[in-house]
Length: 296
Length: 336
Image 1 (spheres, each protein chain N blue to C red):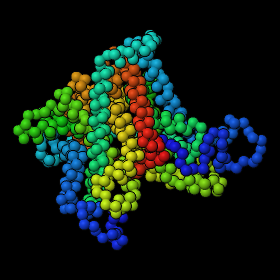
Image 2 (cartoon, helix red, strand yellow):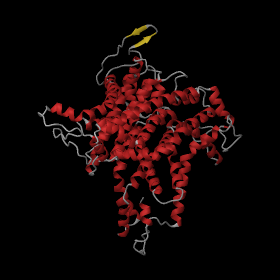
Image 3 (cartoon, rainbow over the protein chains, first blue to last red):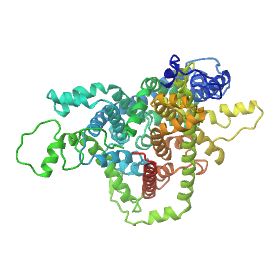
């Protein structure tokens, strides 16, 4: 942090008079402005989500009131769990996202390691392919994938979605993993070799344990990708018992006008677990991403 | 992208440094054999990805490109009606779909709006993200609390956030209009008027995108050595000069990456449009991706060919953009 460096006043030259205000010292006015701006933006960031949470605690008939609290009740939640297929959707999403995560992490870790440590023929094209797949519009792939899945009888099956989500998650995750592996010193691999491990052994026993934060991030990213994907889930899954959460939530909007009560309750139940985990891993998330992308 | 890091590796084909297993001096084997013996484990490690990409992206992509040159739609593809199995009857039409798309009105007007949408979302998001990152990069009371709150829009699954916004935007009963009514202002048709709807989707997308920008740029800011600022201060640089000559160059590599990524993501941002307005009112907020989806899944008969055509065009546009972008970065001496 730059500011801690500035705190070291002992060796600092005496203040020059003049306009230059040293860093780390603000006028009260600047401080006030800074806090005011941050508070306003924080409110904007939090409010829509908070509002959904508050609405879910009001009876459905008061869904559109502007009061923060009104006859607080958990009725929306009990209705949601008892009278709608919410739990089924939740299970479907969990299954799809879980499988995507496990497979995605494994595949992207091996690739990331190979690209980070070895120079081999075909590496550049591979890196490019990984970047370009980021650009693939859903639209160009969705019809062919839809056709393939229907041929293989995988429509309306979790497996079909898992395979599809891997194509979205793996390229990006492999890139991220490369960034993480780049930050682990080469010497560790070297020492593993000296002790007689082959490259796979080195990877498995030495490097993977060191890259745990990276793995956590990759896992999280794969999970969120699968958890929140809309286009494929809407196209591939039909029928109440097969829908994922993203598809199921749409039911509350389209079919019955808008049932804000169950919808807000469902939103809260979907968002809370994701948000909690996210807060824990986000630090690594960006570190890995930018490292993977910018390490020259 | 991967350029050489300081690694003791074979720098060029043919110059093979045997890594790991030491090999006895035998007969020099053939080039291919040598390549295999040096690189076999690297290739083994990337095999799964190559297979996954090949099977699930390569083949569909090829098929998508093929479909874009046919007149395939719901009525002439291979399908089963009850027990009758009907073979495919669509035929090859060459580049007709492309000429239709590029000369017709719909593609170009959708493209125009897609560009407006992408540029405005990315630029606003970047400016806001940079501002907030700079604010959070100081000693300030409650920094981690602010950070947590500002990250929230990224933490909540996208489709949930979009529903939350729909709820706020709702014309008769949404909170925004209720507040306006409280101030004596007429209700705004947020999602039912073309111009307001465009504004509304951009707002939501910016709201979703700022946290990612902010965190990425904050990471970049924190990697700029403090000594540079110390030195600048010694030389009497003003705050603006410090920002202009240290912060901006120091952020260049991170910002070029996040701008590229977020441009691609925004261009293909399916969920926001699809869930917030369904491309409506009319086709006002339809971007290329959602329109292509609509061709395949929402109109009757489903027009697979046109959908694929638009998809291929999107891909071409993005690849051209990425290539131009990289070249521009190279010109600035950015090795990427």
